[in-house]
Amino acid sequence: MVKLSVIVPFYNVQTYAPDTLRSLRANAREDFEFILVDDCSTDGTAGILQRAREDIPGAKVIVHERNGGLATARNTGLDAAEGEYLTFLDGDDWLAPGYFTDLVAAAERLECDFVRTDHVQATGRTRTVHRVPHGLRNVALSPRSVILPVDRTTSVDYPYAWAGIYHRRLLDRGLLHFTDGLRTAEDRPWIWRLHREAESFAAVGLLGLFYRRGVASSLTQIGDVRQLDFIRAFDQVIEETSQDSDAEILLPKAVRTYCAVMAHHLGAIERFEPPVARTLRAMSATALRRLPPDLLDDTLRSLGDRRAALLRRVRRRPTGGEPAPAVTPAAASGARA
Image (cartoon, rainbow, N blue to C red; front, side, top):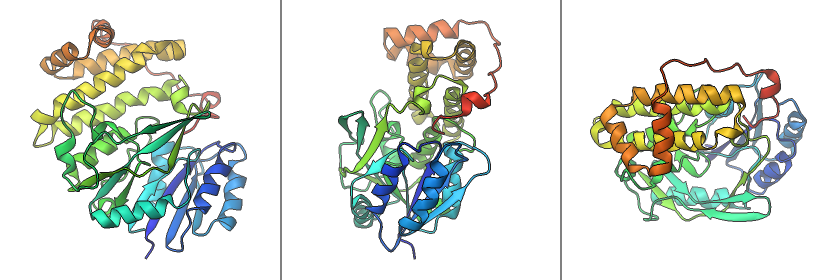
């Protein structure tokens, strides 16, 4: 049986893909498979992946006929995966040699549903370590038990799918697939679902994954309409958490996180194209009105003056608003899916 399946979506990352693929080769093992999903790249990425299929042991290449985005590409990889364990990597990030062997060893030692890891953020030549926001390491716990407290950053606020490893039983239970079509924040409903429904998890202090930040083609750097998918993502978090048996306890955390992310986007609204900025305000106003009013009032009182003022201003907007503008081929090309 394949021990580990590594799912790596690629979209127009010809500048960075060689580094990613070299790091995969340095992590190859006879019982590892690397599922390389080309999400309909329009640059030289496709040719790089075809060559990698011959060069990297265990590499498999799947080509999408149309661009579906990161969530859909990851789902394609999950559907093809055969491993006992699964993990992810993005097509412009990279790994230290031997990292996956250490990751599998940690998962086998802890015998839990999923393990979360620290990572290194690479911005130009600067390296910054980001820790799983959970102090207790190498101890298996209930993931539901670490969602709270409401007013502190917890493991559910560390959504990166690639910062961890997941046992196949989660895939068999339907907990690892992402919401198809989400272009950003696709990992928010995903991480909340894992914490609500998985039985065990642990955090480990393993470093070796390098997350490339500040890539010009990344959606985090582009102010187009796809960024607004965070609203759809958090609407899903709120809806699913509302149906949980502990909804009264967990919803305040979900609402606070939603509001914090919304305030972040509103506070940087100048980076959006003008029609998208208008749509962001309108969609945010509508989203705030969907939240339980008393819970929203409590949240705004706790967020701090600047963020609360941004949200209160939007909340007072008249109902209605412009529909989200269509994504043109020109806007869609060149961005990390």
